[in-house]
Image (cartoon, one colour):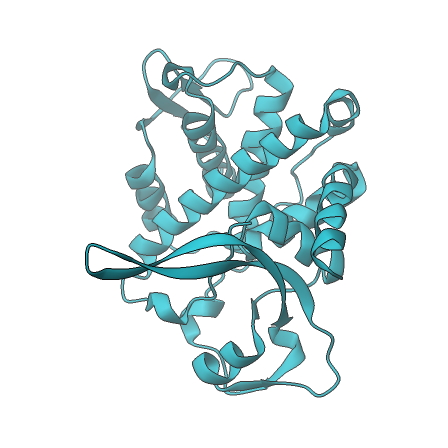
Length: 279
């Protein structure tokens, strides 16, 4: 694919993934690549939806001591074109455009096992539940408290009081899912920050999608998530609205995962992580 074909593929892909049977698979792709832009997540999803970790040919060799298998076909994504310039006797670089490059999934490579911190996923149940909840409370933009809640709601985010309230009688898994969902609301839908008013359905899609991405990233069972209201929203929305929602979901989930990783793995070396390109 050349540069223009890539961008046309992105535009086609945005509307395509908002079909109910494909949306969750796209969110799984986004959960694996929180540092990658929406555009590059779309491209990875279209070309290799089962990808789990990608890097360039040379990056696999230099940073991970792994080699791409002969004959493997690369995943085409966008990378910035950088130009060096001098500012007050200091050489810096700036992005002046984008180009297409090839990256490869780890399944297309052989060699040294990956660093252990890059495969740290929870299986089935919520391991270290108390610690995980404490970490989520630390990164929450508002106060989190537990209380009895009337009705069937699992929790809620109050813009007026700037707090998240969770019901006290939930299972560990439900508590974690609900807290992430409400943190997403607090990050995305705090109208005191001058955010444009969104419909209730759109807000729920964005919070639910963000929670799905983060739960999936940490290996939590997300099979009970439902996006039944998705079709109605996507059929009436303009392409810009769909893209804007994707951007907000991407931003919130990437920020939450990054904040959690700083708490969970303070020893992680940034230069070993596969960086995403913001295109």
